[in-house]
Length: 319
Ligand code: UT7
Image (cartoon, rainbow, N blue to C red; front, top):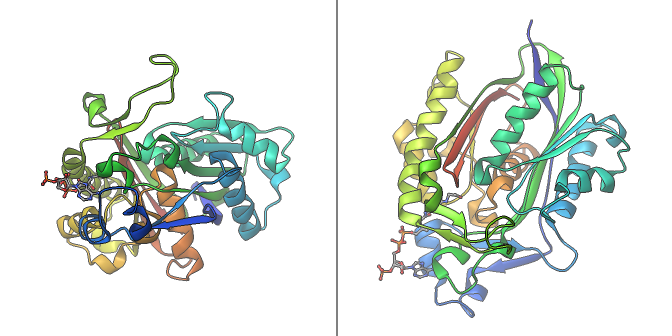
């Protein structure tokens, strides 16, 4: 039997402050009706003083470790996906390592914006299977509120902050990660980007997006990569129990479901509550559906995401 990376536990964390559309409409020229109709978003969480990408990641990790029944000292590898690290360096993964009191392990960040968690999961899976330890923390954590232009109504209403984490172990058997597929196409760099950086402006910059173009590519790429990852293991969308997609827009999720011919009640949706939390959105949604009992041991799940770069990817796993 093949050795596979299995999910031992999941966890998530949100900032204390919840911001609903009506409150946002007091400071930005928008309305609850526009945001709900165009995106399905009702609320998002915004990091306050003392809440950062690393603190949220550490909180989510502690919950995932507890859920898994694994001690932090047993972690061999931390892979943290983020586009909003606490500092340009060191990596937020090493900050999380220190917060969790792990004296020595492999720790690094992965940067693929909204697809970051799929990249992190694929890297961690490969590293465990090639002998770099037996237990990994895979984290998606973001504080996009800190790179939003709060005067740009076309973007600031769409994003929120949060973190999700999972503990991976290894097992010989039929469950675990069955296949992953990753893609990038840098010709689309200017569709979704931040207009600053250490090596260009020397500033952090603000998020800019051509929303309509991103929307169109998201539906095509998400449907294609889901079929691709399932074809690799000889299955189709009809075999899937749950799809846990990146949470950018409820209309993207509906359009993808239609394109795939799957019922929308097989899709885990949290964008209404969390908005788009970039690399955190897939593990946040996964933890939500595991803890509310929808996702059960033995279910076939596809995780998938698409974002800046463009980057996109999917993972098929037996939970
Ligand atoms: O995480 C990576 C993936 N990201 C995404 O997948 C985001 C993909 N894009 C989207 O979700 C959608 O394109 C948006 C939600 C960003 C925009 O929806 P849309 O249906 O494509 O709207 P639009 O950009 O075409 O704008 C329609 C109208 C415009 O007004 P006019 O030009 O028709 O008069 C905008 O100015 O809506 C206006 N508008 C707003 N109105 C009220 C844009 N933002 C707002 C707003 N409140 N917040």
